[in-house]
Length: 86
Image (cartoon, rainbow, N blue to C red; front, side):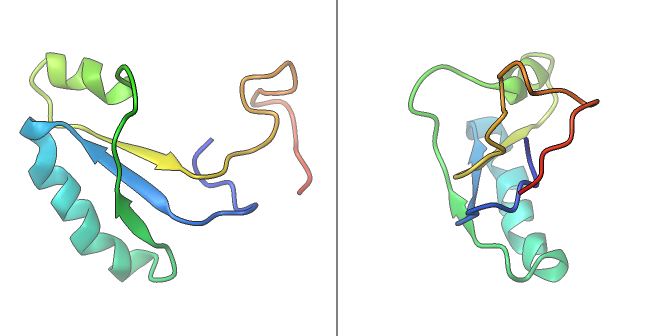
């Protein structure tokens, strides 16, 4: 899901209050490794995501979300044994 290059606009970085420092670290270091990737301070419109379970056990966590993702995502074509040609 993360890393699909088709139609990429930016990468949202989402953090809950206990992990804001980790979000800030992502913003500080991303330009060193992926200078062409635009990061934005994102937010969840509803619910939680995978990072919430880490925080429930006391581990800082952030959530990355792309504006575009591979078209077969969460379909019958989605899986590690499948290839998707852009």
